[in-house]
Image (cartoon, rainbow, N blue to C red):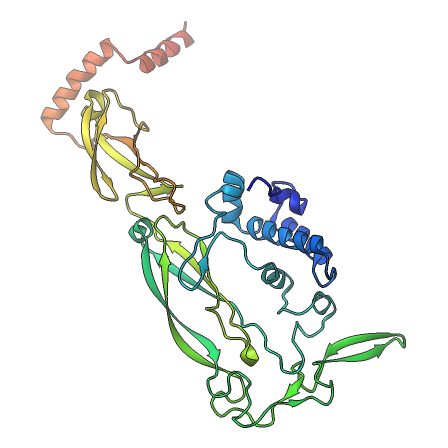
Length: 384
């Protein structure tokens, strides 16, 4: 991806730009290069797509962090195929991004800017359905090994009785006489300027419904339960957004469906903490094991791992077990298991333990460790 421009340069913002600055920069470029303003201009079309790609990454905190760390080849930049055309980290349709930012529904850019009815098509034309979002919680173990889950939701589907037209079988919609099927009317303002507005008679549809479908009462859609199987890859990160294309709401008038966005929430683990693809675990060890050295068992995703502590281990020391962490979503390598030594001081002692430690303390006073000796020498020098 060496031929790609830096996303910050594309939008013309600094690397520490705020979310509002990123959005403002994208809006400016989107308006400048939108295909409706530059018909037939391939260069403008390429710039429009480039700006959309940059905005989609930099407007998402997780994707932006991945981009800042890894660049275009980072793990958050690559797409992932899944059930129903799922993908995360990839780039959406530039027009989808434009619609989300400007609040439109597929109309021309002039409709968006001057209130032309929110992108409705005249003549009862089909419109794209709305996107849906659902949050899915995964246990830490499910995240680590990957899992398939069935998502159950209720969504609007195209009515089977009228194929989405809303008209009763054997009838059709009639063209609106007020707007002539355009869905919009023009009114003269100030004697010299005309303003385009949504037709008040058909509400921008361009057609009227005389005999509504008995199944959907003229809406063209019906609410239905859906079970969707989704494959969550091993190592998927908390906050990742997967896009299932065509799994959203059905579009009015038989229009294409929107998409379903699945946001992953990974539950915390009582023992492990995640850092990128590494697994971190605190390992409590006794003072004797730390001082003398020992072989100890530590937990891993597969069970137990045996690691060796060197004599004189200190709290905060780390032992790394290669390849025992989390799988990488791109399949390049597996992370490591990192055990952090935590020396545990007993809160209560038996009489024998106290006796031995008192003896040890007397011996240590005669031969303190290098750090303690340096500290004591400094205190002595303060009063010389």
